Length: 175
Image 1 (tube, rainbow, N blue to C red):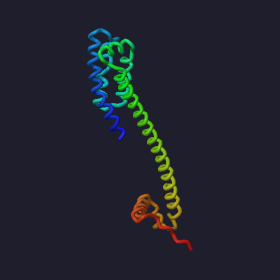
Image 2: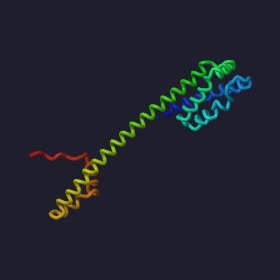
Image 3: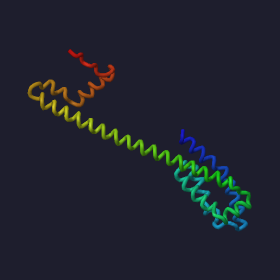
Image 4: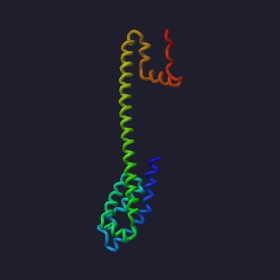
């Protein structure tokens, strides 16, 4: 759900970018900008939107906003019809993208931590199973060879699957 909102937000920037591009071109012709239109990075912003690289878009918008908000550039754009609300729309979009990215990174880190904990638990269980099987084999190898053969991983997995299919282990009645 969050990814859909991110992509909608990114695509919603296309029209404001077109207007900004028009205003930048007009301001450049009048000679009021501190940098060329190409230096503002509209191309990279559009590329990041098209490729759905939202972290890249965050960085590209940051660069664009730095140049737009320079006093000389802001004055030149204002004479071409650019308003504070136009700049705020880009700033708000960048902030929302940044918030989405932060939340996504937090969720990924939490998932990695859970995975690591699950791996540790699985490894501990595995060590216990190997120990039980090895001990059982040693105990019954000489005295009950048939029982020793049942102490294998294949037999254990078969038993686990059967018990899972029948609803689990039934407790033994107490005498």
